Structure formats: C-alpha cells, structure tokens
Length: 430
Image (tube, rainbow, N blue to C red; front, side, top):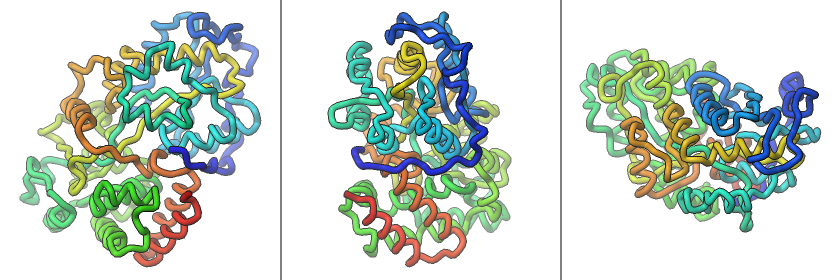
C-alpha cells in the first residue's frame, strides 16, 4: 500500500471543472474545522453519477442531511467507468489548487499518489475522536494505514471475484445453476454447452471490465499466494504458471460478446445476463444492487458464486473518502466523513449499493442474501487486493498493464502480454 504511483495525466475535457467545489460565493465555509460546527455547503466529488451507484449515494446523502441539517450537500459527481474520467478531472483540479471538500478514491495503492503529492490531511485524530479503528476490521485499517497515518474513511467493502449468472440460460444448456464449476476447466466446459445453445457464455464490456476479468483469471490460475506475488515480486511474470494463466484468459475471451469493446461501462454487460442474452458476467458486487433495483430475484432469475477456482478468497476493494488539504469547508468535510464512517450511514448506503459495511457495528439484518454471504466470507476468507480497482498496484502500473490487456484483446499474443506485464512490473516494483 506504500508504493508510489503517478496520477492519471491530462483531462479529456477541462470544461468539466469543479468550480462548485467550494470556491464560489454561495458557499460559506465554517470558521472551525470541527464537524459539529459545520455550516454552508460541502462539495463532494464521486463517480457515482447514475444507476444503482447514484441510488446508493442518494441514500447516504439522506442520512447526512439528518445528521447535519445546517450543511448543504453539493454533488460533484463525474460519470465514467470505475472513475477513470473522474480521476482525470480531479487530478487537474488538485494540481490547480482547487480541491473539493472531499473526494472518493479506492482504498489502497490508489491513495498513495495524493499522499506523495501532500494533497491529503492526516485523519488519524479523526479516527481516534470517532473510535473508528475499533469499529472497522483490522485487515481494512491495515490497508488504510501508511507510515502510521490514515488518510481516508471507507464507506464500504466490495468484492471483485463474483460471477453473476442467468438461471434460465444455464438450465437451457443443461448446466445446474446450484452447482457452479470448481475450476476454470470445468467452467469452460460449461461455457461450451452454453455456446452450443446460441447464447453468449460470458458477457464483458470494454476497458477496466476486461482488466477485472483478467485479474480473476490470474487469481484462479495462480491461487492467492501466486496472485499476491505478482504485485510484491515473489511471482515471476515470466514464469510458466503465468503463461498458463494468460492462456486461460485468452480462452475466456473466446466466450465473450463480440461487441465488448463498444460497451463503455459495466452495466450493459450485466444487462446481457439480465436479459437472457448471456449466461455469465464477472463483476463486482455493485451488480447485486442493479439486479435488486431492476426487480430480479436471487435463485429465481440469477445466481452468484465466486469465480471458479477462487472460492475461499475475497478479492477486495473499498470506496473511501478524503479530506484534501486546502478544502474550502473542512468542517463540512469532517461532517461528511462522520456520516460516511457511521453505522447509520453505512447501513443506509450499503443496503442500496450491494456492498457490505466497513463499520462492523452497522445493522445488516435486512440486507440481501448475497450481502450476508459476503459479510460471512470477508470474515473468514483470505483477502487479496483488486488490480482493476486501485487496491493492488499504483495507478501508473495499472494504467500501463490495462493498455497491455486491451491490446491483447485484439492480437491474442500470449507472449506479447506476458513480456509487457513483466517489463511493467520491473519498472514499478520496488
């Protein structure tokens, strides 16, 4: 988590500015930096701009309004898959000295950029004042801690190694929805059956969703220790086991929809499963929120299970929020972070978002069947950090590897991807 990383360079559209982050005349920041004294407007930057993600944010904002009625929430969301566009816009605003009051980031290596650039306030005293260390799992606190300091407050815990499947499509191919394949070979055999029915075996979209599929295949092929070794140097990217894993990824792509690169975000790929056009989709558990929002019933319309070969491992990521240095309304930001970390805020947010609370005191009795299973698994499984979602490696490493994975989607050159991945790892690994 302490590796250095480079911010995404450039901004696609400088017109997507954050002037409303708090510098405007209509925002009257508090004189005090204490949450209880907060007034005015608090500008919060996220990539939760639509769909089930926006619904989760709305639920959180409702609790915030109750907690801090004298503070107005200013939604600065920028749409874009996994925050790619939002991060570019944010980087430009931070560089220009125009930070929001708080911004969303993935917990883990992704935060190191901002820490190295001295753009974040240390929230260790905030954790102490709110007793958060005792309320969050130790594994999570360890991943948030950098040189003894904590710089963000997590709103949730997501799982990235989940397969979502259409029950009727599986049954039509004589694949038992209640008995998921144990490994990749058995899963590919099931996909052959589905392909013979004329359905798409495996739905995927472009960009980061392919990287997420790639990380799942790596995890399944290499196991927990082998996967972790890719990021700390203990696993040789040039080794035969990695060759086998990339070859498995090549095979997985043969089962995917031909228009995958034209789908810019995750929801259209998940929709293919919901519509019965595809059997499987490997996606984080934000997909659970989409299924629920659209009225689909678990066990009837869809089933879910860990990506074959990864049972017993929880591929982790977490959305978290920060207090940037120079925030126009630091008291408002701390008010927002107070709601983010609270049991009440996390219950309301995660129930809608499909993820599980980071705060272990949050009430989850009426959470979904999936979420209850995820809570259980997080408590007992081995934990690994997601590549595609900023937890495993620095952003610059992820960007370069994502480019290589995208190229592989076209040329299917196993040796080329393996060589590129090894060179990228050598460049960024300490």
